[in-house]
Image 1 (spheres, one colour):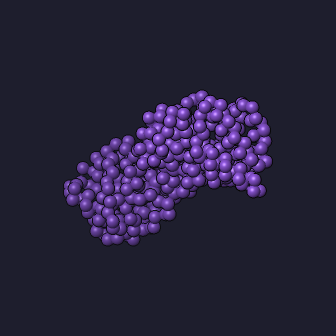
Image 2 (image 1 turned 60 degrees about the vertical axis):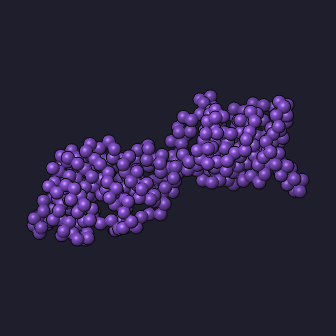
Image 3 (image 1 turned 90 degrees about the vertical axis):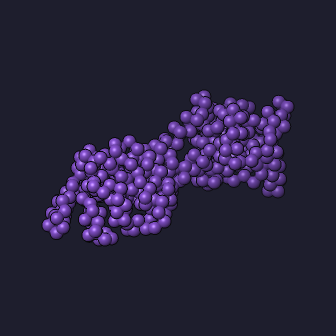
Length: 390
């Protein structure tokens, strides 16, 4: 029986890991490939913003789920102690006492084998199996394989895997720059974005696609137009444009839900919302939208707050919240008396634009016999008081 052991921080796991594992299974004819995410690595500190070992274990399980004969072990991830390969191999040796154990590793780790903890004991239990990460590795691997054979009588297996120019450290940098989506599967990418691990920020095309899937298709032009004007307003009023863009893309993601679905989401996420009457049902999407924007897309607190108040407004709104409120009101698909004046005012004096928009909302609701939300009255009163003082 041939058992492969493939350890690493997998921080995060990417398609390079997956291709290497598949090549090892096929070329070495492994009966079992045990993937071992490191808990606390001995050879390097975990980067800032890295997920906990349990989260990396989850992502590793998802990354390798389609590799034949592969299983993911939690032997190191759940341990509170520093991970050492020799200890892990001893555990696997007890499970597979008669198997040939092949330890998979990249070139750098292979060339440093004699620096590992209890390396002679480790070498007595395993057969090294190395795959290269760039074209220049081949001669180094062959030279070291000859050295190990001469000194320890150990034969090295060489895995010829397709070279994918990506490393976890490179991917982490790409993720923080709204890139790298092609090097990781969608489930793990979504998971990383939801926790904003590694300082990750969603790629715009991905975020739009996810948000638009949650919308009634007739609402997409509104959301797209809202994004455009929100960014313009953000640049005009000194707000981070990326925050405005995220808020605009996500502000209506629960708009299509029925009232009972909104209430279920609020209960699931432990969010209290005062009882509402049937005329206020449309206000729920701002609350549930902010909840899902945070839980699914990991938006910053400022973006969550802007989405929460984009329908009613509130006293003491942030500039980002004002930008989203007005952008939602004046985007180019809107067509109502006064929209052109409101658009002009939004770029001249955003507080006056807020007052005008809130007054129009109160007037429209009154014409339909609907009482405005208390937050709307508070927002209007606060802004008018400030305007009078100025």
